[in-house]
Image (cartoon, rainbow, N blue to C red; front, side, top):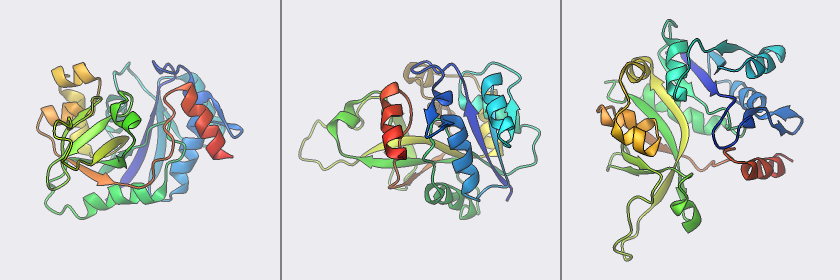
Length: 242
């Protein structure tokens, strides 16, 4: 299988504009993420795909590979689909641009999902982390996922799911990490299909796959790292980087 990584990178993030160009240990967040992804050694190629000249130039001027998006996109998956449409690849892994602590172990688990899926029953795979803090469970910026018995995603939500009506039931809550591995056909299908109501309501692109009957295999990881969604996250990342 030919496996590449794409890092979608939008400069004007709604919650923290310009976050990908913020300093993290002497380099911008997006460059740290790109370098961490390359350093895993798992991919035939790694690209940043962006609508920003600033981000594009940062990557290219530091010896990396970047692709300029030709169109405006509502989400990272659309941006990646445009970039890979004419590429000869089998699997593309979407690493979020705000994940400078991307690690080899977690990405290897995603790749192995497809190596073991001989009948091609899995359209895409993604990562999740077990969470226990009530603050995380209730935080709408922490996306939760619930699973079937075989670890396929049933639903993603910004709300606490499942709702703990019976306090005696021992429920495990999982945070969805926005790292995806797609079959090329799955991400191109996503690109061509219109957004439906669940995705529009929760503003979670992964719901489009579920609404159209795609199967998402969830893989648990112990590595949480720091996703930089807010200025406070950046401060935590800077402390952890040191």
